[in-house]
Image (cartoon, rainbow, N blue to C red):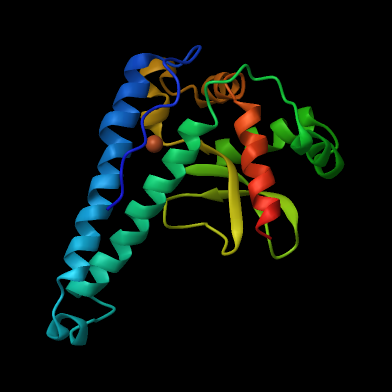
Length: 198
Ligand SMILES: [Fe+2]
């Protein structure tokens, strides 16, 4: 049984409480609830249901496809909320590795922002355990674009529900505001965890 994590902060600067409440209480919580519902349904499938698994349409296919959408929706939103609520000042161990790999934090942000403008769902800074390097990956949907074995460190949600109330269609301003609310302590904690588990 998966549980909804509470928001780890009260409010953000420049992203409204209304956006955050809808995003957390309805959308993120919805993924957690649906993941639980899908897992319950899978546990209740009969041998006949499994035998009827079919790639064009089957009950099993629907549940397994939507299981990854709901699970990634839950996981990415949990990380997204956890790395916000900070002062936005880049600091810690990850900054020196970002400098090594991207040239500077400023150049990293330009690339990250460009990727987030080019994605339909998420842009994610991840440590890829296949080459032990940081990568910016993009996903058009929650169950598309993920790279196996990579550990998500800093995801940004670019679905319109993240910014339309506050910024209209101006995604670029939302991304700048997101950047200034980052909690680098938590980002470093995640990076440390990613490196420990390589
Ligand atoms: Fe979202």
